[in-house]
Length: 72
Image 1 (cartoon, rainbow, N blue to C red):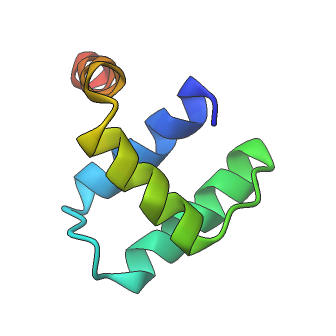
Image 2: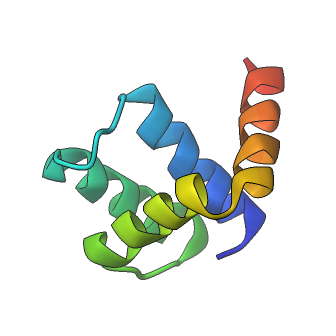
Image 3: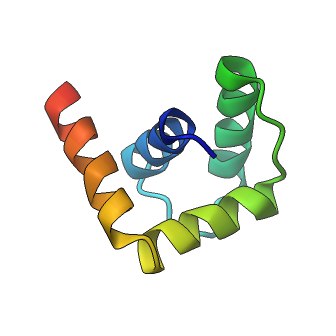
């Protein structure tokens, strides 16, 4: 996943306060990524990417959060 795609995913999930259990929110992420980037991923793949981003890729997650804070 590119940085822009992850930025879009994190933006939607943070805005809606996603906790891993709301299927409608993940469907919105799938739809947005497909529309904006042509990226076809399943909800499970994106859920795993979100989990990995928060738990294992701390530096990249911090970078994304900084970018989102600057844009608001």
